[in-house]
Length: 225
Image (tube, rainbow, N blue to C red; front, side, top):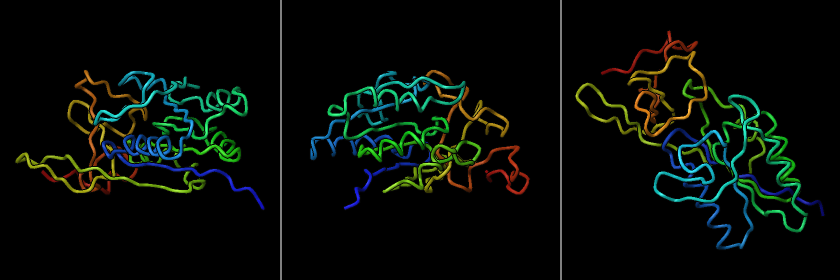
């Protein structure tokens, strides 16, 4: 009988769509029901919470290994490969989890493929699109390998001129600089600091998402107030 490779689960969506919560729920299920040994990784550049924890906004958390960057804006996927394969075979984890997968470099597909082929289950979570509305290459490269993909939505937090919140299903991430949509030429990777009121992020529906300067922005009007 041909040995099947381990499963890959992807939780993707915009800001505030509970991606990390779903990842943590998955880890808890595998630990409690299957008694899996688990190893969790996160980008070191994501220092919004404890650098050694994956944490969701409702308070759930899991100990994690911070992964250094390979370039200014990309995380070193080979770090995970080297970290796993230095462990003796019998002590390697049965499940590897990676949060904020959108930040990882182009080697992430090869790393994940190696883990799956060695019967190590992988689960990842992250943004499917940047604030520019464009897909992250790291996510795109993994979707074709996935056994299960959960595309999550949030609620659009856009407020009209009367202060009414839209509330429609949100599939986009809006970056705001001083309350205004960030232009297309802004850097893709900017980590929001909790004490930084200048740069903020919101979940938006397609009707209320706007990124000035995009190739399609001349065809898309600003959201109505």
